[in-house]
Image (cartoon, rainbow, N blue to C red; front, side, top):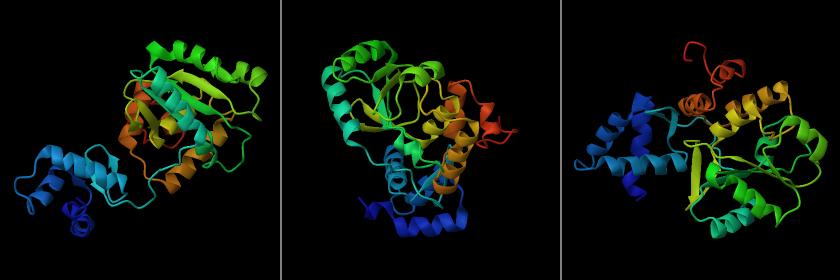
Length: 245
């Protein structure tokens, strides 16, 4: 399969033509395989992006990556939670990540060991009560006041919130997902329910560091921000040009 990706040839093609569209990628591969199917192309694009050979700065546009791909490591607690939920709720989609992923983008070290668990709305309360039987520090949709009063940053807390339909996710297996960086940046702007106890200046720094270090798809960011009704805030945090919104 790697040979069919034509990576060396593709890199030369991109250097001379980028950005390229999906149609241009199809025409590129048709020079080697005239009968290539569109579904095959989509799978190759997925593989190229996963291997950080191809980067999509906006929907339907592709360039050579200039920065890293966001590929954080899964933690033991993430895997533990995923296995429990998959066994108990095999048909409920969920996403899980540790706040250390955001801490790594901050200039300061925050005493936060939260694990954020997003679950389909229909199963959210049931999963919450189930996990309360397994763990001590499990919270459902904590707002800022509740967070300040009752959640200790020194402990590992599990914070449950709704999983939004069409949130930008990477599927790990079956109903288990992890969020893309684009989702994390929009969610930390909203920060309700509380993910990290930080203010706007810290959020801006996390976003700036993410932009400096990683490839971002700004179409994905805008699409998800519109879903969460916060697209206007993207301008304030440097994630979108005013004329685009």
